[in-house]
Image (cartoon, rainbow, N blue to C red; front, side, top):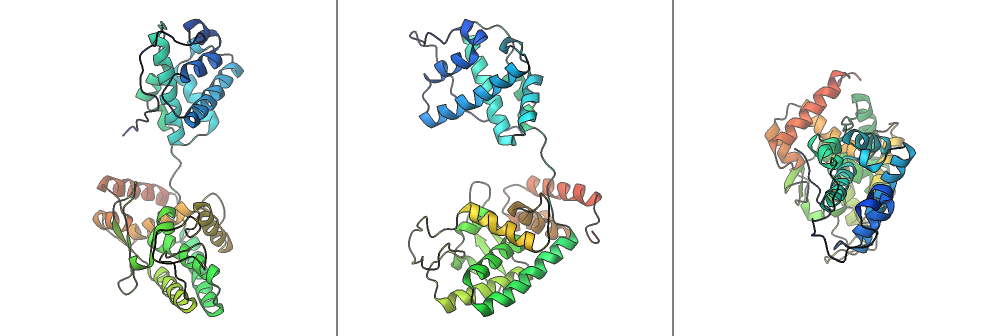
Length: 333
């Protein structure tokens, strides 16, 4: 399914159009014409700054390769996007932005092709997605062993930060929590006896219950016990500060910053001996899903445990895992 990113709503040509917004200047000096046109659009100043920067970068690439704007086709656009190594989201923003610019040029007399429209039809904005990353069997064992070792050490030492970080990574690895969910989940969402974490819905997930794997449940039991001993008052499961608290709306200083969650996940994975580009929080969630699949969990339960909206998402996940497993023995790697 192609994602349509609407950036600039079509607007009629105003009789008092900027003097630099002419077809002649678009063809000879697009880096001048574009901001002149963009300034007339009903957008925030910050958005205009971003779009101007994007367009200038594209024009600079055209100049570097000796390509005039009226000679651009969708293949040039593909080459540019590939060279920038952009994410799927940013590729689509570029395609949509350039399509809108050429739509405007057509309204003022340009008769050539619209490379943005053609790129959209050929899904050039989607690019090539990186293969989904999973931890192999040996790496999983190393990380579980580290979590268990740290749990024993820090619940005895009462080192609340290190115990929190251990439980945090355990919840992401053994419960499939996203970074945003780890930031927001509260103590009353836990059901230790039943080994569940209840999670509220967000943009990418529906409300669901994540089933905790045993090692994660043990780490969270130790963390909750230490919280009670130290009388941490925050209702957030993983607060940023020991002194933050009270059952009230969260202050920015009470919630862990997303970058901090990422850093802690990477630190513990590295400490466990895991290396390479798989050392990231998303790999923990992916590997949780892989462990469910390898246990024979059906798609309906994967949807429940992961919070997916559609069964096709679970099926795509299963396909990605199968593709990964075909090149790696998941039991002996």
